[in-house]
Image 1 (cartoon, helix red, strand yellow):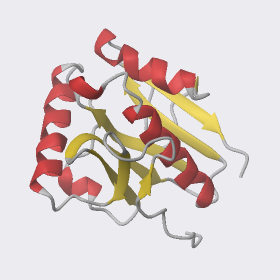
Image 2: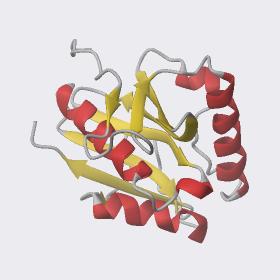
Image 3: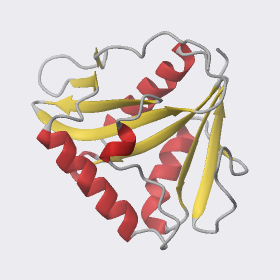
Image 4: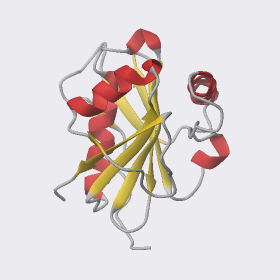
Length: 174
């Protein structure tokens, strides 16, 4: 596997400073607050997905060396988490992206998604893909990804066609 530079360190949303500023921190899987949000994500995603079609990663899977993980902080609270997995060569996948209900439509998810896109570019990615659910619960997530240029695509990596999944990709100009 080619060597890539490390992912970006913590960043603050340049449009925010002071109260309400968004800080995106690498790692955090050892933090009990982060672990609780991850458990919530897994519980909700699995409840809203047909049996055998849930692909959300658990804590142990997120600790793998081919995964970069970020936690988003605003005013001392954790509104969102997200991860990126390296696939073969110059292809990466968004994993375990979750925003709490109270922070949806506030710009938090967009800030995290832009951060992940930038991290993929910095690592030499030519393509960034994801799998999300086809059920209505995942509609806002699909809209977020579309608003950032992702388009539906065929299954990638080890995925197979599944009526409960929507596959999306973004071509990156590295």
